[in-house]
Image (cartoon, rainbow, N blue to C red; front, side, top):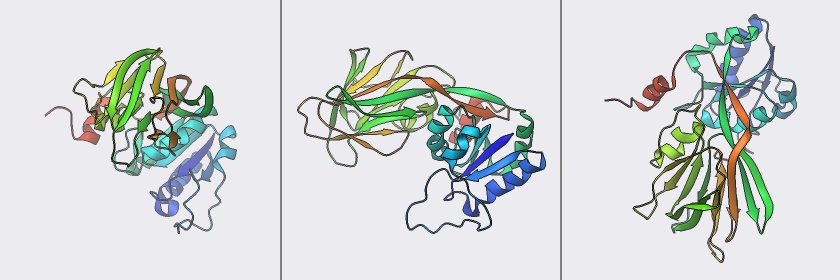
Length: 290
């Protein structure tokens, strides 16, 4: 089995966790390739071992059986799109603060050994196709595992937008923005903005207004087959911004539309333990029940 180890160098200093996992997996016969999940920021001095050969993640994914990400949820989200398009399941090792999507913590690396024999299960998570249309022309498209966020950015002003489901108005939002999330993304920004917690294997689309200026603006859970359109008023001179899974923002102008629908692609997350979603919620959030 060929396993890629992709470690966030800002979280995994000296790639110590990745190298420990490499030793564990090579002992049980796995073929290991080490890589970084992204290009480090220019000028950053990273603690990378000189003797370790690092491969290019994009080049290695087409021939990989499994991808292990070391970092926080952001590291997994960064890899999810490309891994999913190549049909490669992902296992997360949490080196961050919360890590809802990670299967293992730093101290549980010995549990990786069964992977070499294929002794694991996978859990499918729905994704969203996100397109930006300007004058009927598609100017941007992406794939989201967590969410698509349309917001006013850091400018101290009010954003206005209309949210439609299959061309029927769901909400007219005046406030900081709106989040369109998957069940996986329900425990991310959407939850912080007052949205519901949804089991991650569910099939639905969650719409959560952010700091809305209307008492009637409330989170909504929609059928997964709805096509969601977030539309900016024509003639609006205020720019808004779209961020997919926390990635680089796309600037939106008046009259632009963001179309969001359930994707045929599904992220597969590897499961090794028998921890339930509710156990993870109680562990990560300090408990849902007093």
